[in-house]
Amino acid sequence: GDSVTQMEGPVTLSEEAFLTINCTYTATGYPSLFWYVQYPGEGLQLLLKATKADDKGSNKGFEATYRKETTSFHLEKGSVQVSDSAVYFCALIFLGGNQFYFGTGTSLTVIP
Amino acid sequence: ETGVTQSPTHLIKTRGQQVTLRCSSQSGHNTVSWYQQALGQGPQFIFQYYREEENGRGNFPPRFSGLQFPNYSSELNVNALELDDSALYLCASSSTTSGGLAYNEQFFGPGTRLTVL
Image (cartoon, rainbow over all chains, first blue to last red; front, side, top):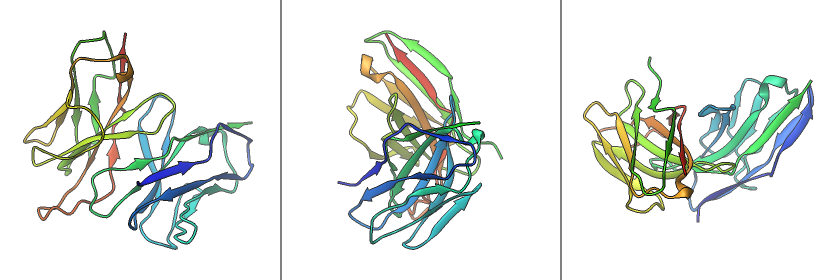
């Protein structure tokens, strides 16, 4: 079935370190791909998205490229800040579909 | 523009009781989806409402039911609560055209934290 697999956490990095959170997907069609972020005690916020192969989504210094050949959508940031500490969720949805399929989330802690 | 709001913020119930959670969709949105997020897990799709009718359902039993009102707000009802129903319940709003084409971007509310004792 359709699913999303994320790298297991938690991830702990020093401020200004490079971040990669891996995400791969299994899908019967060609989904749109998303990264959501959840800060402690809050709901989900859309971080970035890509709707077709080779698209790159970017926001707040985060980037992810839709790789159809490897069915991946890895999240990267060149220099993390303490304020980036949160849980990150990779998700997919099909065009016209009604439900997101989420990964299990990756917790990131950035220490000064 | 008003975002998605949910009430209450927190709720404590005992096993066997019933609960109603509420969601107001973002201005201009006509579709509401509900998700259950267990501790340490990603959100799981419960169901979606469009035009006051259920428009898709995930793998949840019938004791999870919902309503959508003419102003597009929504309720999630859970009967015969079980301990495993303890979770964060998220509501998300989005737009669907009159032709049934859904715009995929869903905007999430802050959630209701339900604890079942």
